[in-house]
Structure formats: C-alpha cells, structure tokens
Length: 409
Image 1 (tube, rainbow, N blue to C red):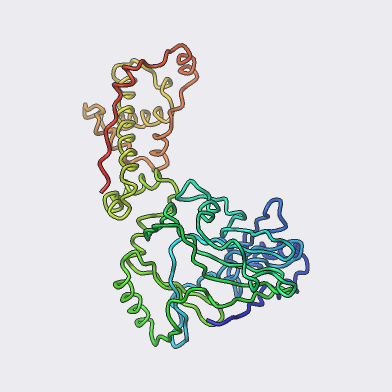
Image 2 (image 1 turned 120 degrees about the horizontal axis):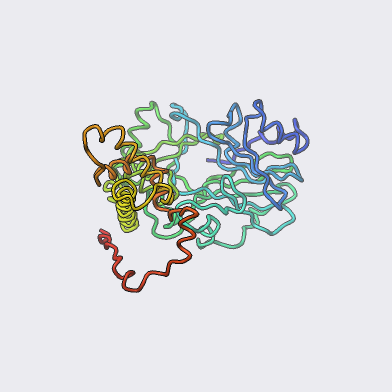
C-alpha cells in the first residue's frame, strides 16, 4: 500500500487553535466523548477511544490512540486506525496483512530531542502490566532491535514528529499463539507535518498483494482456507483500503481459543472463571504451562472449603466458638451455610454436611471465591489472643503436608 495522508488533525487544529479548546471539544458529546489523559511531567496527553462511551462519527476511528503535544499543539503519534465493524467492501482493491497476536506499542520522537518515547494505547511510558508481572516497557526492552533511527525516519522542520507502531509478542504475554522469543512486528510508520497532517508510508509487512473480492462469501472462504493452512492459533487477516481504513477478520478457531483465554490478567481470576464453566481441562490442552499453578489453586480452594466446614461445626454443632469470633470471609460463608440450614434442612431434620459446603462455595460469585484465597482477617478479639500464642513447632509444620501437583504434559 502506498503512502497516504490524513488531514483530520490538521482540520481540528484550525478549528480549535489551543489545546484547551481542542481538549474540551474532544471530551464533549459533539467531539466524540473521547478519554483524554495528561502524561505527568511531559508536554503530552493521550486522546483515546473508549468502548461503550466514545462516539466515532466521521473521523473518530483515527482516535484509537493519539499522543498530542500540548505545547506545540500537534499530534506526535497516531496509532493505526480503529478497525471498522463488519466485513470489508467487495469489488474494492484491498491490501491483506497478517493479523498479529500481541499488544500494541508505539514509539515516537519529536524535533529537538533525541529521546525515544514509548506508549501503549492508554499509557505513556508503557508502565502497565497484564499476563506478565513485568511492565510492557520491560517486555519491549527485551526485544533485540536497532537502537538508532534511520535518517529518513528522524523528525525534521518539515515533519517535527515521527512514529512507529509495533505489535509486541513475548513469551510472558501469550494471548493465543505460542511465542518462543520476544519479537516486535512493525505495522505502521508515519510522520507529522508542521500543520498537523499525518503522512503514512508503506506498511513494513504485507501478507499479499492487493486483492479484489467479488463477495463476502469469497472473503470468508479465503479466511477458512488460510486457517486450515496456518493452524488453529492463527488469528486472521487485516484488510486495508488505499486510505488506511481497516477491517479485521479472525479465524473461528482463534475466536474460540481467545474466548477461552478470556480477559483475566491474574491466573487466579482465570482459574475461577474456567472452573465455574467446567472448562479447565479444555483450557489446559492449549495452555499447559498453567497446569501446576491451577492445581495449586484447586488444592487451596479444597483446603479452605474444609476449613469453612470446620468453622461451621465449631460454631453451630460443638459450640466451641461464636460466629463473631470467625475471621472474614469465613464468617460470611458460615452465616450463609446456617441460613441454608434454617431455610431448607431443619424442617427435614437434616444437618449441614461437607457436600453442602462444597455446593455453596462452588455457587459463590467469583469475587467471593477469590476472597477465600486471601489471608483471613481476624477479629479484634482474635488479634489479642494471637499476641500470646507461640509459633507452631517444627513438628507441627512438618505435619501440614501439601499434595503434589500432577506433572505438566
């Protein structure tokens, strides 16, 4: 795809001659209700489309993520255009590109400084995290790449800012496809002219030369054929026209695995969601690296369930304790158990058994199940008692053996 220009930001600068005016407009209903985030200790702000809130309108697709220099009143980095919904147009020349699996990272430079700035879609400095405990900046820095920019890509008086958008792929941030080593895929390259016009150059990676499809059926058949050829972890294709408009089509198998993976950044949240769906075994067929940690979660949940039952017995059967003596969240669960007994079991002369506790814990909302994995919060009375208690002996510690997780397949 050849170079093309976008004049959206130039027009906005002419209509709103100061940053404060533009910011007010962009956050308004008429301006698109975009999120604007000031980047601390920098002259920059990030203008970002927010799903469910922003109104795209005619030009809103270009505000997927834009870094704006508040001092020069110029954009300095523009992420690839937000993909349009639905299928690409038929009987139109389209450039087909690989739909890469990973996280978007933008890098830009401005005139008068040798500093290289890095952002994700929503955060300057790329300090966020998700699957990995490392920040996106740390993951980005683990990729081997040239540490100097080519002269043609450097800012100039004519183009005071230049940028590149990458897809970052890293073994510690696996979405669906397995990543063996850290890698960056450059998907967009552009410059900002002095009047705010964005000039894009040819994308770095092309899947195939321009293609014209005569029907949506033909497009879907192309995706199906490529999916079979490339395997079920292949994400799909990005379709672009000559003006940078984008459409994305994912393969059905990728959609299935992506849904299974979910949007949980923490393994515990992912475990509890999959457990509630009876999908853990299916998930581990594709993400076997989490087998051991999932098994440790299961052991912990079973242990905590037994502790809840023991607490119920101590309060309502042997009367060794009072409900108020229990720590949270145990107190709440024991209360729910007894409410179940009063409402459903007492009239039948039945009592709470271990299976009742298992059923209740499994039926708890996932956020309440997650509380069981935290250290119970003792009451003030218990805190006073604990000050007088000695630590467990070595023998007592040895008796508290844990079950070994199954070996990874």
